Image (cartoon, rainbow, N blue to C red; front, side):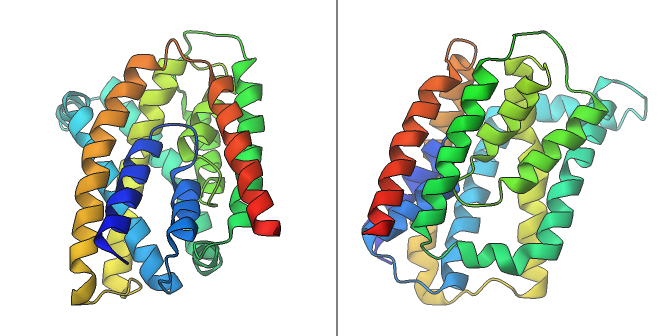
Length: 263
């Protein structure tokens, strides 16, 4: 992989992680367009590094929320912060189970399967359209909601299904306020990414060699900076934006991917 390719892919990841348009799907399309010839294990490592970068950008943007949650948790009281952490843990369970049992299967999807990406992007678009028709409420995320949203996050491990799109749409369909849904969606993935990286490092599943350090570093920095911008931007527009706009974009990109894959 060339440094310029890593830079472009890092920017793509950072910008699309927080928008409901599937960062993993865009990464796979980007790799295909740029002619990435990495073996699946190396390609997966690059994807994991970029997701790690955007997880860090999430922590930076929500640093006050994260700090308040930590303080509330260590007060050892049954308060809103303790309940929020418990909801995050509950939301992680489905993705952890799916990832543990089908990890090898999912890894094979991150190798330039553009047809699958296109189909899943169109599926994401349909989900966003349904969510856009839901009525706005002020409801908060409950414990049962957290489990259902977690299932949506587990399904979104497929490239082309937007994680934020799936989780936010599911939340809205459950009657949860969009702003609260976005906050929960962005924060719930952070411990999952850190846990996945820790597991891969301990088990040696990630393939790394010193020659990949440069492009991994470039991709990481690009994704982190772009993620800071995109996350901040998404928070500002989530109240005003209609999910249908993102659905139209997903349909266009998904249809293009399908056409290119079938040629």
